[in-house]
Length: 178
Image (cartoon, rainbow, N blue to C red; front, side):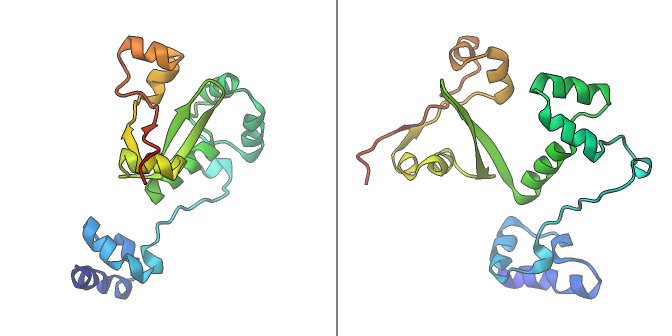
């Protein structure tokens, strides 16, 4: 598999292209991962440009700074009034997660809601292990509900009543597993 990937990659630098521009299968990418090729690394470009040079409306740093001070509802309304769906920071975070192959999932209890970052493709037991290794070892099931459904319902109990929960996001585990 490594040989196949290297055969595909070898001409890219000679053509002035990064290795990441070569179409590789998942297995081929994993086969050359240990080489740590710099041009295989994902890239996000962030630039400070004049508002007049933007193809689409954007937010200047002053407005971005003000947004961080606003409550969520006001921030959303303000962004809508500017014709922008999301802040620059939000766009950057979303793009970074995407390029790095990351996802976030939330756990929510009576006192707090917390976001957990996982690799895309992790299984539910592996994702629970991000919280605590014992959860992964003794994993039984996870009850889940989509974020928007949870917010619309207002609580996990209400989401259950609406039928939008599939095995709620309560990690159940057996602590006697070694």
